[in-house]
Length: 71
Image 1 (cartoon, rainbow, N blue to C red):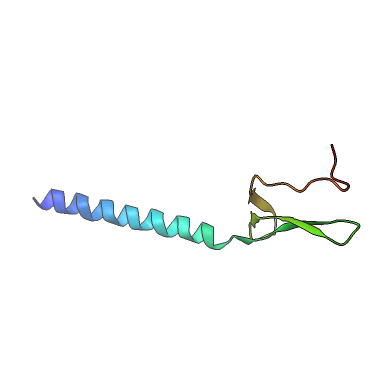
Image 2 (image 1 turned 45 degrees about the horizontal axis):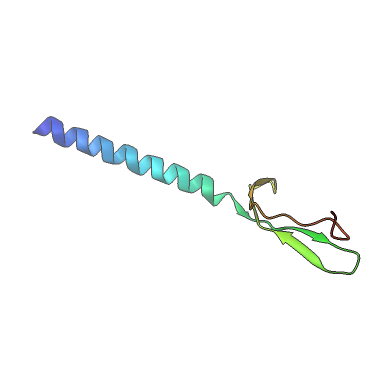
């Protein structure tokens, strides 16, 4: 019984450590929309998540069309 309790305590400690580590990594990110401004003054923005250096690490699948609408 004592070995089972020790194993349970170690498992819970490992779980708590892994959760706090992933939370710390997530804390270094922030929202950073990437916007395109067109000649008429309108803007199109794509939602992104950047790391602490401002480098985008994930963006939505949305995209901004080229100026003039493109074809």
